[in-house]
Amino acid sequence: MSEIPFLQAVAVSKIYPGKQQAGVKKTGLIIEPGKITAIIGESGSGKSTLLRLLYGLLSPDEGTVYFKGERIWGPEEKLIPGHDAMKMVTQHTDDLNLFAKVWDNVAAMLPATDLKAKQEKTERVLKQLNMFAMADKRVADLSGGEKQRVAIARAIITHPQVLLLDEPFNQVDTSFREGLQHDIRQIVKEIGLTVIMVSHDPAEVLSMADELIVLNKGEIVEHGTPKSLYKHPKFLYTAQLLSNCNVLTAHEAHLCGIEISKEYAVIYPEQIKIKLIAAVKNWVVKQVLFKGFYEDLILEHGGIILRVLSEETGKYVEGDFVAVRVEKYLEY
Ligand code: ADP
Ligand code: MG
View 1: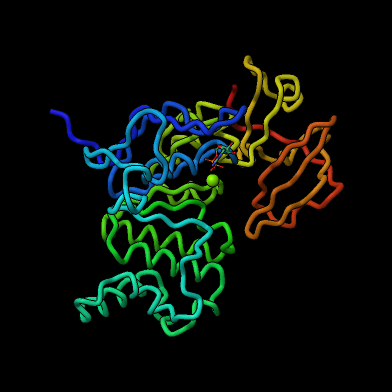
View 2: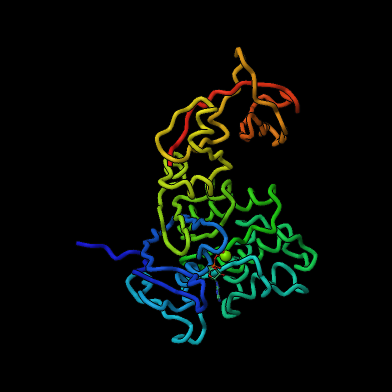
């Protein structure tokens, strides 16, 4: 007995004409309902292309996308592109009416046949997204982050089954972003929404997603939970997407006191400790990057640069000499 997958891509490819042969290559995936799946990958790896294929904004050259077992039609086969049960929000949200109030922008997505329901639903979604206090403001007077909230409110008020987000928080400042991420998580829990998001912000995907899909040059190279991929990335590429990690050659690793048998050592900044008692202190503190409750120390020794996380803020200053101990590393 096989269950029908919620959203599934079977061997889809979309190669844009041109000599670079870029796009998405023979990709298969299954998206589970009621979860947040994040697609990560370097710029140009095909994230937006994959998202548009899943939504039906692009037709695959080969392969098929199925939503609950039914084929998703591409733009050539459908009058209004995009699957009716899905909504997409990108960073270029230009379909807002800037001169209308927040309330009217959101309410306008519902039919006027049942005014009471329209009123109630608009109020509920504005509250869910913490926008109720701004209901009477003109969209033109909102910040970038607030406009993104309106765009998301417009997308979810019609109760789509899938919400697709293509780097929608890029223009949103960090403090605002966390609130929005939290509210979206909350909505996913409350109404069982399925979210597929594209992001290149490690902090964002690690804290927000239930499942990560890693794209490299148009191919899915690995997938898993944020925790498992962070702890055991199969590829150096994945480690670099998820962390500001140190990548050292075997020779450089040797100078840090570790012997590896493969080509590269990957050391996360939190896996290096400053040794307090050491006979030789030969790493010099080049930079201290203040991060709030912690610091990133940029150390140098013999031409090797190390990024080390230090929780003891203010303890080290530029020019200090320290010794380090690598507590954990990965090899590639
Ligand atoms: P990402 O979202 O990961 O940055 P995209 O899916 O936008 O990547 O693009 C993947 C690759 O396909 C890139 O090399 C990009 O230049 C190319 N590409 C994207 N859209 C088009 C297009 N309409 N025509 C030609 N090439 C494109
Ligand atoms: Mg993109």
